[in-house]
Image (cartoon, rainbow, N blue to C red):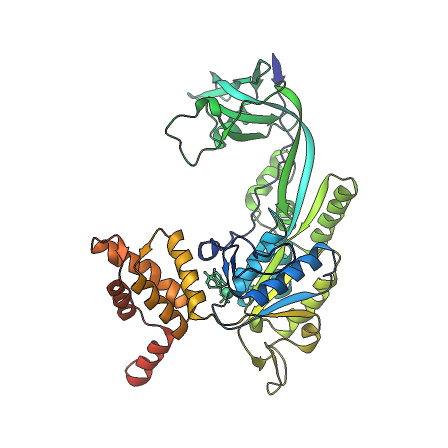
Length: 465
Ligand SMILES: Nc1ncnc2c1ncn2[C@@H]1O[C@H](COP(=O)(O)OP(=O)(O)O)[C@@H](O)[C@H]1O
Ligand SMILES: [Mg+2]
């Protein structure tokens, strides 16, 4: 019988990555740049349709990044709205490899009353830099065959009972073992919703519990899709295991900014009163960097620079631009991709408002940029993109409906046409049809105005405001 009794050091278990959710919903069909081995773009590949020049340019950028020749430089994707700028940036991060962080923000997100703009930019920089930590840990791993908490009288008096310890039986292909665990591990077992039949591992020196999945012996014919079935672990229950964790530098900053305090009563009270989150200072970041570079030197961790995508660059001001120039030159920087659909505008925060700069970027930044241009789509391309999205949303469209939508796409924008797709689907299903017909699309057009028509309405009737 093994006993894991003392569980004190819980700080080593890292938080789950807090990186922003990718805005996949609009871009779920994008699966990469769709280039062949010579870097040429096929007309329809990787979820992309057309826009070949921009895709090939992005392919070269991916090569530059992989051969580490992008330091100090950044990318600007410029083109009209809905020409795939965001989609291209996402595809670049996909081409760099799995689990490469993609952090999309809009220029105006950096302005907050609480955090300095430069600090907000730094935070997003660090959200876009991943760290893969490989550790060999001593663990107990197996399929749970028994899970019994044992109760005892409450030592503090009172009427309730407490859990004194919990017995967990673990089974592998080689044998079984019963563990008697500390009640605090019982809590983490409950948090991970561990039940009999799950495959789990428990780190032996920290007591951290991780649920790997459901043992495939329990797979039924009614597969629950959310469930991941894993085979019964091989080898002994008690063994050494390589554990890979993907976090971002920002996760590490946050984990270290929390007040930790000691074990005595006073410092515990102090923890309750202190605000949950303290400021992440430059000092803290450089401390984290030191530890990270130590880990990298020891071969425990590997840096994975991701992509920071800043949409609407013209919303950034001079103060941020100067900081951006500096941040691009630091030795750990993500790939920065800027996007803009503006031509010549004034640079925010400059003294002389009569001076216009391309995309509202100061010349010294423009100097460092590789600029990729996106072009509007023709009707055929729009038609193919709409068909792809319709497939993804499980909609069947009649030929006339698709033609009408792609015609709209050329007249207004691709995004408007894509946005009509879902409501048209709803209208057709209300009418009890399984295909979306021309009339559904036409009805949607009446219900929802595009930008040009809505401006026209406003110009004609001056009743608003
Ligand atoms: N070449 C393309 N092939 C397939 N889908 C595209 C293409 N270009 C844009 N899209 C899709 O059209 C929509 C608008 O594109 P987006 O990248 O958001 O445009 P932008 O950022 O330039 O305004 C998104 O759903 C995107 O995935
Ligand atoms: Mg966009």
